[in-house]
Image 1 (cartoon, rainbow, N blue to C red):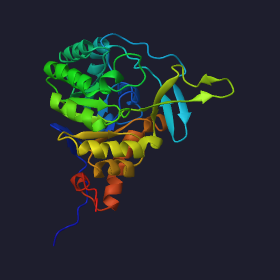
Image 2: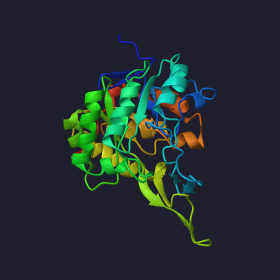
Image 3: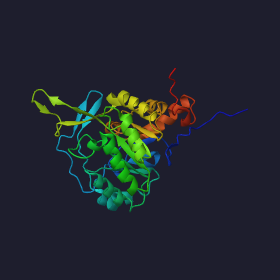
Image 4: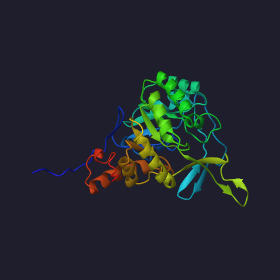
Length: 310
């Protein structure tokens, strides 16, 4: 007689990187991880992608930086950060005591700046991978311009690949005509995995004052409102490339996580939910295990790419 399973194997792999579970805190929504350590058991998370790092410190965008929308949020933070050298000297050592995988999000205004940031990070221990941000809609130069055209995207990834010994993830923009073309270009250039996708360009105005509700006029839309859109992008991207895809967009519930896995994602990132509930990431780990037990799913491999299309 075969005994019934009493636990769920939540472990997943993003390429060569093994995670204890598929829940990853998204860059720009979880600080450097340390800010949440008194609220969340960081060891429970599959991974943390830290705030985007530039070669020099950045002040970010003018206030106001956040604006609530129907079923979502607009943000225009502008990649404020301490700079990569300060991160390596002051932040990263404090993350060394945690078992969760730490991924550094890398930003540059030029191809050379991406390379320089990686070169600094290569001198440090304690990082599992890099995530190239070629898709931020909230900066005036760099970032999104590289993610909007396949040739430019490949140029950044090729240069970064030469500088990096760690796995290289690339965070793609949803604000393109065909995300599959960009995905295939960066895969050919040496990307190990893709994050799909960044926020959707949007805006909000106050009709009474005739002013933008954001200091930067436009921002990036995130939250539950974008999940159906990003779910489609993940589905299409997974079928266009042979490298893992990490889904990012509107994840709030265990069912959301499962849906991304069903369409092919290897893992998910959690962003806006952490603004609503700072404990959202840990809650999702616990909730996913409970949901799987209820559905009699004892290994996440049973969910991955399981969409029935007939």
